[in-house]
Amino acid sequence: MQKEIAIALLLSLCLSFSSPAGEIRTDNVVISVRSQYDSVRPGSKSALAVDFQLAEDWHFYATDVTRLTLKASSGDYIVFSEPVFPPSQMYEFELAGQKQQIPVYSDTFAVYLPFEVGAVSLGAGESVDAEFEIGIEGAMCSGSTCIMPDFEPLTGAIKVAADAPMSEPAFELTESAWSRPVQEKTAGWADYSVWAALPLAFLAGLILNIMPCVLPVIPLVVLNIFNRAKNNRARSIAMGLAFCAGILLFFAALAVVSIVLRVGYNQVFQWGDHYRNPVFLAGLSLLMILLALFMFGVVTFTLPSSVSGKSRSAEGLSGSVVIGFFAAILSTPCSFAILAAVFAWAQTQRLFLATITIMVIGVGMAAPYAILTSIPSLLKYIPKPGRWMELFKQSMGFVLLGIAVKLIVSLPEETIPRVSLFSVIFSFCVWMWGGWVALTTPKVKKYIIRVIAAAIVIFSAVTLLTPSKKLIDWQDYDPALVKNAIEENRPVLIKFTADWCFTCKALELTTYSNKEIARLIKEKNVLPIKGDTTERGTQAEIDLKNVYNEAVPVSILYIPGQAEPERMHGFEIKRLQGLLRSLADVEQAGDEEGED
Image (tube, rainbow, N blue to C red; front, side, top):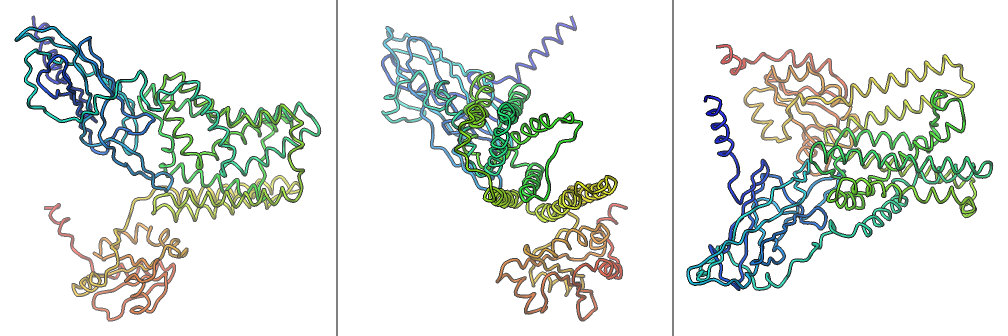
């Protein structure tokens, strides 16, 4: 008996938390439906309103790909027209340091479903209920993720009565709303023919070959194929196909990510999300720098004999796969618009079809190389190698450096100095690795040099790239703020800096990232002020020149009871520590209350 009571209580509890009829309720959205009239007459026109209430920062796409779609169906009595959507809003987000906009539906909005009532034979006072079902699909996104919810259909019934008053509508619609019959396929790109979409995906892959991000790799590959073709046609074909395999490997990895998100997390792969990740941006910028140094001849890439099996043929094939993989990666900074459209379409389709579409992009990118290696006669149209090729290769190195700079400046502001400094150290160590040794260098000496270079890189990465907590709460420069603190006998530390001042950045990474300095500033109740003199005409820039007669970098410490402030130029961490320790201790009221 107790078991039956427990089951009954459990069922009642579940029912009490379930959504009411005609409503969908999730953590991110509430969807409900209402009728324009309580009842409608045979032969009349009316509509349903589907109301959406989205959680903060969530939205549905209003674009032709993965857009919000509603499909209503009913019995013989009701014929629905196309949905009437509200005006969209522009949603702005940042991608790789650039502002992007996309039309969306957000907050609270309604989509109207006009319908006409067919001829129904009803006597006076008679009525009939026409049941309806509304299917809802579309990508639902926030600033950081997208999902493809599997909404249950909205269901309900429209009351058709011979004497329905239809005098007080819950909402109004224009007459044109009923002039658009429902089409079997919506106009969105998501419902285009597969045979039209796959060629578009192939074309998108072809276009990736002319992107400036991948252009630096192409001459090297073509030159490699050209040189191999003069000696061994079969080897040339094999290396070209290995390059194609590297490209396809990259897109296969993307397809796997798409499958994992769709199956495991019910999320949509948003092309460009990886560019919102600072770790990815920093890593890709360093890869660009490494490839640029390769273009300049500072370092060369070779595979260990254990990988190549001490075979030049195997080394060439493995190297071609790696270069093909990197070529696909290098295309992504320039290909957002193309890849975003194709990926968005793919994720509205069945999982198998979506995977095929992603791979077709890779086939399109790899196709020119496959053709070139299969028809060696085309190689004669490629200019002969010479000094121009070396100059072009080096010029492409500068293109890669430009891309690296673009990626670095897209990082969070507080991260840019650290990554910039590490990039210089990284470049120096790469130069050590490739330029300080030669074929005649003794093996022990070669290992020592490269171990030192690797150790410097690792130590610098741990020191500069490890996320650090903001130790000092700097206040923006304000002369009145400084004056009031001095009048209250409070110590004031002013750090004059500028974004273009490399020494200032180094000072920030050393002196003002020192935990002892930060602790003393807090314990001695020092007011930390940041005087940013990056731009001309700012109050900090004017006072630095006219009041203090100084130039960056300089730190100025006002000590209570001392007529003139202490001035520190450059890296005077020991002196700053001594001055801070000499300040009078300040009792912390909050600490005393906590002890009581």
